[in-house]
Image (tube, rainbow, N blue to C red; front, side, top):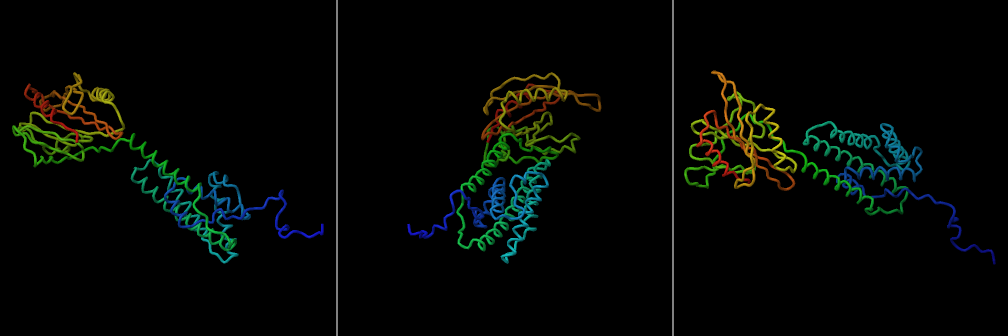
Length: 371
């Protein structure tokens, strides 16, 4: 042994000494990080904050802490501010400007905006505010990432921008998955809004169809149905205020016999998948609550499929005392694309119901179709 130290031996630390890794875990493209923050707005910002705390810890900033401190209400935001402020001070020594205050305000604003979904606002308002929350957060993360990259470029001149990582991909996919599951659940379970109609104009008959016997077809593509009326019936405007009655929920079509002896009102409701039997029970209970008399119902087969036919009477106040009118209502249920559309076609046959009036109602109902 001549005592010569092999070249490079002094550059290798003893195996029992842990060499700290530089904070280049966040040396990533600011544009890519900003875009991924917007796309994965539910979970990607959490991943980024996790990496931010790993970065400040590896850089040994004075107030570096564990990410888990951010889970403490209010104090968690104090901790986030400390990391950004330490970055600002460290970058100032490198003549790099960091807008720590702006980044913090945008992060906080994005987080607070997201809580609107808990306040029972309308779905459209919640969607708009969530979009605002995502944009504010993405801008904040983009600005923060750009500051970190500038700092790392000055402190680690030989480092290179990192490619997209598995963690980033998983964070974005989690948001996409959560949105898909949540959207599917909402679509499947949330009923469509069917407003109370105070005024409905007369429907326009189909011009390109000529029917025998003077019948007229009416078609509503938006509401998904078609129905025909005989020559002595017509669609007319429904004005709840002029009639002195309450608005009808979900009213889509209204018609009367020309002699005013009978009328029909077609209503629609959209909900999660539900069987006809369930609606039969619900309608039966509703009729009992509203004071309907002599309620009976039976299953019938129409060209459109199986339906439930309800018959009942209602008594109304009249200048001469009271008047009792007879009603027949058909409940038609159709399920497709994991949604159930229910049509209620109610015929008011008047107080002097005759066989011909009853037969006309049945004939009209046999022309009902779902589009």
